[in-house]
Length: 188
Image 1 (tube, rainbow, N blue to C red):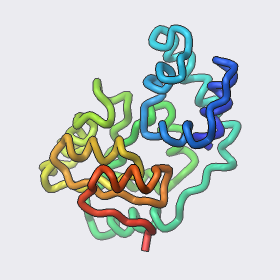
Image 2 (image 1 turned 30 degrees about the horizontal axis):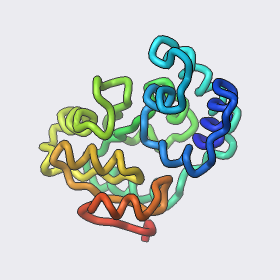
Image 3 (image 1 turned 120 degrees about the horizontal axis):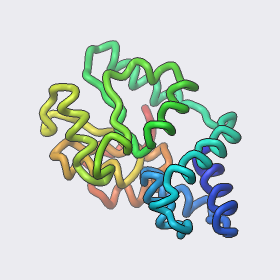
């Protein structure tokens, strides 16, 4: 849904349609940064307008969005075990709210840190540090599980363990090149 939506939005704004691979490579980058990367006119000044339009287009493609059952099951196992959990996302708060409304498992997380909540989003340490403060967990005791290089870099910057999953949007070779503490090619 994100890749389809981004490709449509970029085409609408710039007249160009990025490849699926390129759009996928930018997942994990906040929309406001993607608007700059894609060369949107007046990207900073028109961020709110572009974000609103992106959300409208994502909604058009929402039927192609599917929760990845093994990942959801693993998350719920952690919740049931009493592990403090957070979602640390590059989505803005409005983007995340749309996601959360469609996926009831998201209500089980203790806290959410979006790109709207921090001055410096992933790959900066700030989102991971904020999640840790909210959970009352020291970063060196935290584990960030992610499918993008931005996730892994954010974890490292904060001093948290970095676990890469090769079954998400990230390219496995790029994830391994980040030298995560652990790499899981499959949920099993």
